[in-house]
Image (cartoon, rainbow, N blue to C red; front, side):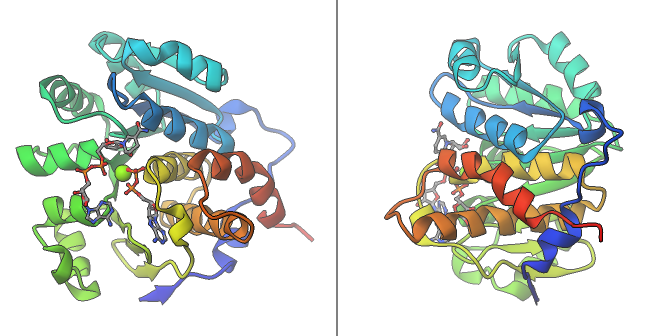
Length: 277
Ligand SMILES: NC(=O)C1=CN([C@@H]2O[C@H](COP(=O)(O)OP(=O)(O)OC[C@H]3O[C@@H](n4cnc5c(N)ncnc54)[C@H](O)[C@@H]3O)[C@@H](O)[C@H]2O)[C@@H](O)CC1
Ligand SMILES: Nc1ncnc2c1ncn2[C@@H]1O[C@H](COP(=O)(O)OP(=O)(O)O)[C@@H](O)[C@H]1O
Ligand SMILES: [Mg+2]
């Protein structure tokens, strides 16, 4: 298990080329947020925008539209019940983030199945929260794509069948290889399993133990993967940045809110971008 260092930031976060436009930095489509969990998809969407994704579209319950736009006018909105539009928006995306606040009822399951049908093999798909629970409980076949799972330990138990106490690095590595893709097993010391390597994030603080912290990470991963070519490095850099910002804020705060991490992200990325000398 390789322990991540600050090096992952400077090797991954590149200086923006002058000759570029929003299309250069990727289209991210996020799907989630039922009537009760609108905050989850808003935080994930904001994290993707603040991480630097070029274009962000949020597909969510119609009841979340005005809060999304009040909070994040940079994001476009689509109604989660409009499957034709959802299919088109997925087709046009480079990265799809599926699951924050989606819920696990019949409507959520239908949305997830429709989304899976629209996904194409070259796309990067981040499966988080409810999407992982539904895949595990409904034994859903996964679409062909570059899939990144971001389970917390209970979601990882549902997906891998490994009880939390049995989630050792060796067992996790084997389960991740069987499932395929990249797996981010979130805990107070998050581990990342890629097809070729395993990494441990040495950072993180209990000040992060608050609802929405994982939704925020899922959106950050979406934003990083949309911009940086090496997707394993992009995932590692997003995980490291999320915890590093939290640790910085926790020097002065008892609890760190997900939205504070989002606000701090553009400055943090500027400080740690690769400098051409
Ligand atoms: N503001 C919002 O709208 C929020 C929406 N959320 C959404 O709510 C849905 C359900 O997610 P939840 O994770 O709350 O519910 P889950 O039922 O999936 O998981 C929580 C359960 O897992 C257990 N658990 C064991 N180890 C854990 C660990 N290391 N981390 C977290 N839980 C652990 C908890 O004790 C609890 O019983 C997701 O779609 C999520 O995105 C949550 O993110 C909370 C905030
Ligand atoms: N004690 C802790 N130390 C370090 N990181 C933590 C701690 N508690 C939670 N986190 C981090 O917060 C996030 C929680 O994710 P998750 O449970 O999916 O949150 P939510 O679904 O509420 O957004 C993960 O990135 C996890 O690593
Ligand atoms: Mg979560």
